[in-house]
Length: 336
Ligand code: PMV
Image (tube, rainbow, N blue to C red; front, side, top):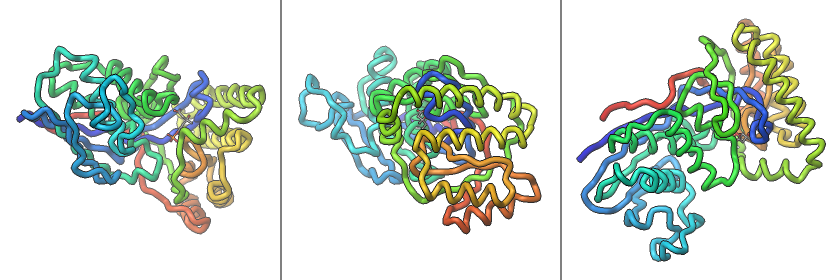
């Protein structure tokens, strides 16, 4: 039977989170911790999934029940709410692919195994990366040979089907890799020619839920929030040339400004604030949280001679320094 293995990188938001959901640009970089998916076409019309990193093992259902919450629920009452959390993205990705590319899908089943190099707790985008891996793997194994933008559209649809909202920046990073200037829904996906990005990353130890954070912001005064988004959008525009020129001092200042605005949005938390202050005090160029906030990671840029002090400061504040390289290759076929 045909088998293919595909990998896609995780991501870190450099600047522009939240505002990007409301039409402003952001900058995202792909990191060198990857998600891998092996997809096998089988004879029996059964979908099976092993995703041990998210506690899914031996999950199975008939192919004609893809996307249906309970295997016994009739298709007419299709709802994805009771699919186990760890299986949702892979299953809905499959469902969307089969629905859109019927001509390429033959009778029989599919076995998927995912394996991550990073913890799903970090907020590196494991759900989006696994969605991208599955769509790309199906595209290759069935001969549909979709281009990157089509893989993006289908993967983004999958994320929206499950989360209801989001910009798609994480999907773009998983597909295109590198460092991207990005606008919601892939309206702009512009690779930035960056050859190095010496980020230091600290994990807060707290798992954040992106949708909860997005909803939390919706409860604030939307006039104020819109003003903050516009300011964030402006600093992202300034960050683009700074990044391209490796002007880390300017980029760091913009990261600090972005963090202040994120605090005004109310998405930072004391633990992140402590880690951020520690990095600032140790001489970093600039520091901010990365992603929705409420936990996950902070990122910082520091002068060469301050890197160790910044890392020590993050650890002393109770953070876990994670060694990651940025600006890495997007989705790729590992074998097949
Ligand atoms: O929590 P993360 O790392 O998935 O980042 C979310 C970033 C948001 O801008 C809040 C949402 C989005 O889809 O852009």
